Image 1: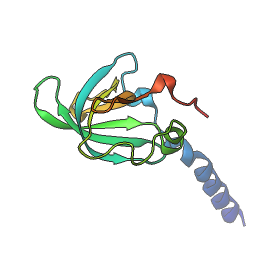
Image 2: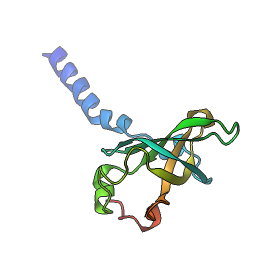
Image 3: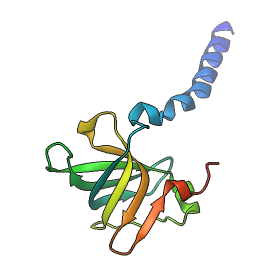
Amino acid sequence: MRFSLTLLTAASLLLVTAPAFAHHSIAGDYILDQTASVEGEVVKFDFRNPHSWVEFTGKDPKTGETVTWNAEWNGAARLGKDGVTAASLKVGDRLIISGQPGRKPEEHRIHVLTITRPADGWKWDRAGASPRY
């Protein structure tokens, strides 16, 4: 009986603490007091929770070579409140993405603050986005 109680307690602790490890700190991945802008073409748009991702090609700021970037954006639920849908960005769209650069420049990551599509003037701005819930 004592073994069963110990096992039950351990399993309960794992279930309670597991969600805490699932979400990462934005400050751990991105430099929050800096901003960068990258222009490029959409390769893939993952509209999902907990975070949406825009994969796009753009220039490496140091080498000037074309590389693949990954932009971490809000989740689908929050973006939906701003009118963003899975069809808002399409492969080949030329975008300017501004945001907080990743802590590891070689990973070419950016945390989205604004996205602009110059071809039609479409823009998403975190400052005007729906509040967190």
